[in-house]
Amino acid sequence: MNTRAPKNSSFGSQLQFLSTNDRIIKLWNVEYRVRREPITTCEVAEDTGDFGGQCEQVILLPETEVVSEGFEGIERKEYKNCHQYNINSLSVSSDGETFLSADDLRVNLWHIDNNNLAYNVVDLKPSNIEELAEVITYVEHHPTIADLFLFSSSKGYVCTCDLRMCSRFEKTRNAAIYMSEEDPSRKNFFSDIVSSVSRAKFSLRPDEPYIYSRDYLSVHIWDIRKTQTPMQSYHVNDYLEKRLCEVYESEAIFDKFDMQVSPTGSYVLTGSYNGGAHVIDLLNQTNWSIDVKFMDKRGKNVGTCKSYKGKKLLPSSGQSAQIIS
Image 1 (spheres, helix red, strand yellow):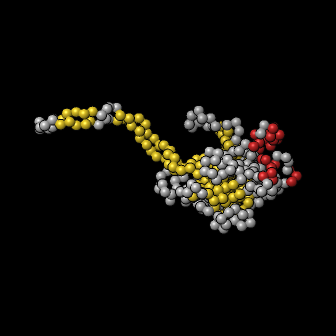
Image 2 (cartoon, rainbow, N blue to C red; image 1 turned 120 degrees about the vertical axis):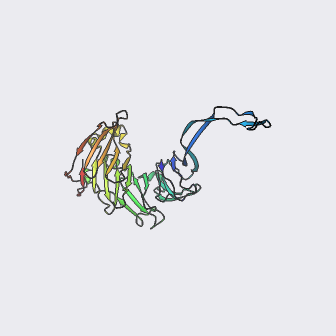
Image 3 (tube, rainbow, N blue to C red; image 1 turned 90 degrees about the horizontal axis):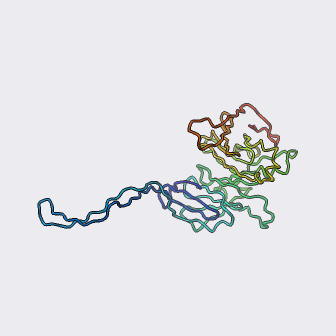
């Protein structure tokens, strides 16, 4: 689900959001509605008037009372028949006029007022489906530049694409690919699986040219000017590195974790196992591990903090990125 109030759509400035199931996208309006029910019936009464004149019949309208009130979603449009595979993500552009939808192999660009036509901007489907080597896992518009977007891949990279340079994704013309090469001596059977990127985000601050990505084990922060190695990497599920055989046999190794970045760009929130979450403080270089318990009272300390400030380790690729466990 993606929420955005389009600025120039035919629905004005109302609060709207997009939702999707496997193949169909829906646009909803959010409106505040008050529902009333009558508590009396419509009656006819006689009125003699204020001055004792002629008697007249008047209709007494029923009285009502409020039985419910609140916000409701009202379906406005459906966007369909443009995806052959299940949709995994939606993203609305910064100007509110267009949005992206992605499935495993394609990314489509829609105008929010036109639900009959979508323009394909990314197509990774090979001519022979048996040669399929990767799938798209996520897509997101840039928060301020409507023509710039990114998508993440199961091959372990994040790709940014600028539609101002070319109307479709072309690696050699309008794309930048962010991917760190692993040291061949440390590569094993599970390397390609755990490097699959499940989420990628632009920084919400225009003065910070960063991209955030999440794979199975870690969170990475990239400088958009450097594509070969992340600026920082924060371990999240590193305790599973010695148990990859077990999580592979249980198929848990294919789990995907969401990730969100704070508006200031100072914190990253991402999920983990056993009902836990991680809040990473990028400024103080701390990683808070929080047990999510919805019944706990507000203000109760529910997490533990691990500080790794000043500790530098070499990444697996042998380059000088900072790794924070």
